[in-house]
Amino acid sequence: MRTIARISAFLLSLALAHPLFAQSQAIKIAGLVELSGTGTTSGTNFNDGVKLAVKEINAAGGILGRQIEYAASDTQTNPGVAKALAQKAVDDGVYVVMGPVFSGSIIVSMAETKRAEIPNFTGGEAAAITQQGNPYIFRTAFTQATSMPKVARYLKDALSAKTVAVIWVNNDFGKGGRDSMQKALDAAGIKVVADVSTDPGQVDFSGAVLKVKQANADALFVYTNEEESARALRELKKQGYDKPIIGETTLTGQKVIELAGDAANGALAHVGLTVDAPQPAIKDFDKKFQAEYKYKSDHNGMKGYSAAYVVKAITEKNKSPPWYTVGRQTPTSKQSQNIAFVINSKRMVVSRTYSDCLP
Image (cartoon, rainbow, N blue to C red; front, side):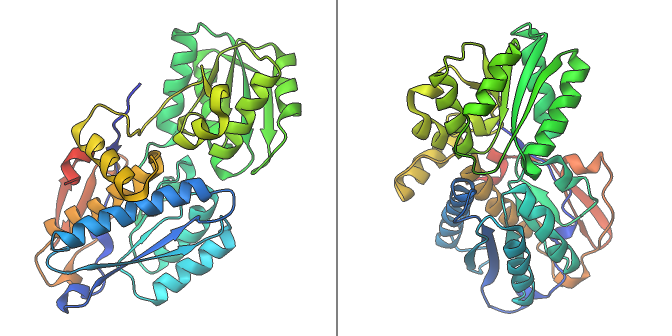
């Protein structure tokens, strides 16, 4: 399964609505991240990735000679708090907003950055995030619509599964993934015989696992956040579940492995981004991240890190003043596969991989 993701977004001029760079002030970037609550693992990794990139960019001279001023705020994994923080970021006149990561929060908060025409990067994976026609939202991750068909093909072709049980978390992330997976399974001719919804932050998975065992499906698909995934894996081992356990990145992330221990052995997942990928730029990131923070990043750290470098790459590409003359146009589905920006009514499309944008 593919481990190196292409950053796909339609960059509507990076929304340089303000003549920000006309002065020598710092470039203000706001982080709206989950530093507490059920999204702590995701938000902390994403935030640390952004901070590492900002540190490197500033040490190398900044963006067009300007230093980045990055300030992170805790959304508490609460959509209402995220929305309020987005409003504050708009009032503060920031150049770019990073986060939130949790799909439920970004779906709510991005309305504020859209209203102010401020670019907003996220690591959220719910398909709905980029299906609303918001030209200011950019994702440094695969969408569920991209990853779920790959998982379904694996279930069909590698495991010859005819039936599957599904455990999913009942939030925007989980519902989006569950719906995308159902569509992919239907296309593959695989029947869902147990559809088990769980709560965000759920501690006890004994009932959910019992339902899965009773369904006697050929395989189990688990789509929950990291902490819940670890609890589910521990309970599956406790109850002696012996069928294939398949998931997405959040089933086999670094935090899950740490929390689940031996219970994570044997779990398989489609991983869009991983620091274990055999790619020089990613290996270099892994080394620097661990040196800086003394822990191993998951996919969210990579999302935050790459987002900051995308901002640098596009801003430096779009370097002809005055900044406020940059034009705008509505993206098409084909154009959305690339990073695009408009300069003086002449559209330029740039397709970049991680190695293109990273140092």
